[in-house]
Length: 162
Image (tube, rainbow, N blue to C red):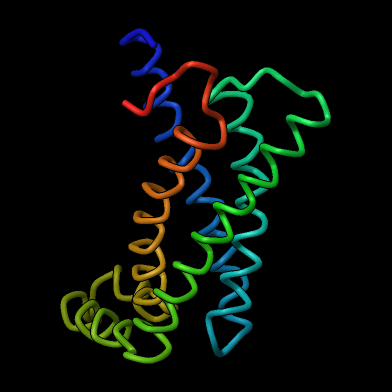
């Protein structure tokens, strides 16, 4: 793979990874206020963002051109399997850090203290700490997903794991 193609692939993965994360976070934010625990909003946000990610990764990022049923089935099963592994990571991350250790509370408290009376104070009223921890978990998920997608799911014939 030429340097320009590698650069295009990495940049497009980052751009669409960020867009997938925005879709995930927006969906999570919409649903998390309706549930006491984080599991259901995490799963809903995951499903929506995975469907989006599959198509942009297949078509735009890794340029997998084959749409025959056998290849599409193989890629989608592998993609969903890898994303299920990252969902388990994200759900465990949120369960441990937010639901169990309640780490979001100190983030909210710190934000309220820093921005008390400031126009930014409203941000810390609506579960900002939960969203920050979810975003942190999403960073690790993005790296893990790139490795799976690049080296296993959309790997081109003859391409080495460099």
